[in-house]
Length: 157
Image (cartoon, one colour):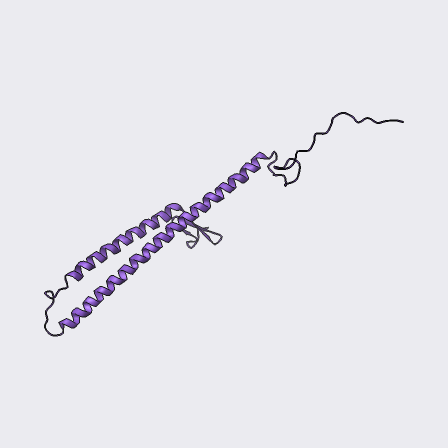
């Protein structure tokens, strides 16, 4: 039997409807977002250079050229606005993904600590079971008074 391609992807596994991501995969996604942000920054810088070259000396004043120039400059401004918004959105995605990863790591550490406590309690018990609270021998229960091993005297009389 083969693996259903919809249930497994590189670096992550799907089990019982839950997605489990490995830390390395999340780190790779964070790095990808950083590279994309750098790329968008480079595009914006190139766009700013292009816009700065759009001077009166660049275009002829003959005929309908001015309408084209105005539309062209408007499109460059619009493109710059879109790239700025994309950059901001990627920065938000990066911050959210990083926060979620930190939260999941913290949760994993908390769960691990609790499991270690349970394991210690189980290992401390002679038969692997923990006595319910209030029963003799349970942690926090009062220790019963020792009983005498001497036989009881019976009076005849």
